[in-house]
Amino acid sequence: MNKIAYLGPEGTFGWRVVTRDNPGAELLPRSSHSQVIQAVREGKAGKGYVARENSLGGTVVDTVDPLGRNPVGIEMRFEDGEVVGSRGALIVCGETVLPIEQCLYGYPNTQRVARVHSHPQALIQCEAFIKERFPGAEPIAANSTVAGVENLRQDQESVAIAPPWAADFYPDVPLLERAIQDSPVNDTRFLVVGKDECAPTGKDKTSVWFTVPNENKPGSLVRVLNVFDASDINMSLIESRPAKTVLGRYVFLVDVDGHRQDPHIARALEFIIAQGFATGLRILGSYPRANDK
Image (cartoon, rainbow, N blue to C red; front, side, top):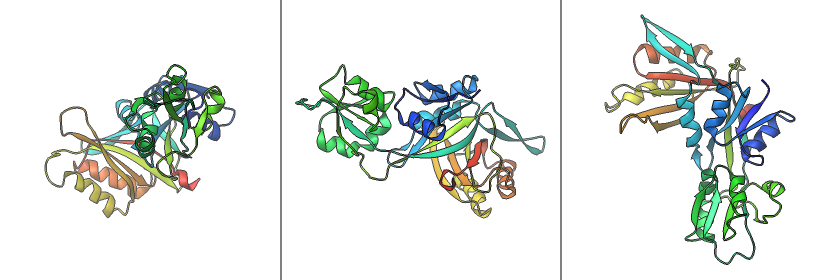
């Protein structure tokens, strides 16, 4: 299966990064990152690209949460006196980074801008620009940036935020201004989800997802982090998401430098499980670091 799933339609940043990294590939657009993951799970695509985080907007929630809901990665647990792992149907097998330029689309004769259409991440990336230029305008979330431009065909009292190449897909909607994001440094990191695990390269990253027992007890999370520190493992990302079970219960996400098969990382993860420092630990995947490509 050579198809690649991405957040469509054509013209999105997902489309851009897939066509950049896989010229000539057969593409499968989907209307959400959750559906991208589902397409790979169901065998409709060989792999899928999902936006993980943006340097301005932070975590892409509609990617992170579906990664947790789907059988992505290797679940580790302590069973009959030993640490065992079971592989899910999917695994994170790559990452890539795309520089992001956001542009303003609309009709020059618009007297009053009532609404700003775009994907929620783009709205966050241009928040200061919107407040300064269009105070009082209502942000309207679209499934993608280019979908926001398409909305202007029925809502000409509004503007949209989308990439510069959206003009190629919607030539009837004028591009008014380029590079409107709140910072000139605006990058999005994409993860590649597939069914085949990456072999170690020596320049890898591993993404881990876990919960801790006795979460309200001081030091519960620190015990896990101290194991990484004592093992000389660099953590490049630490964040939490609601577990969506009870209020105050969280899932923790950590990216560490190295491959899960590297001896010091394998020992650290096994120690964390064996000591009961973490529960529900999943290795989402190990893959080459994008900045070392």
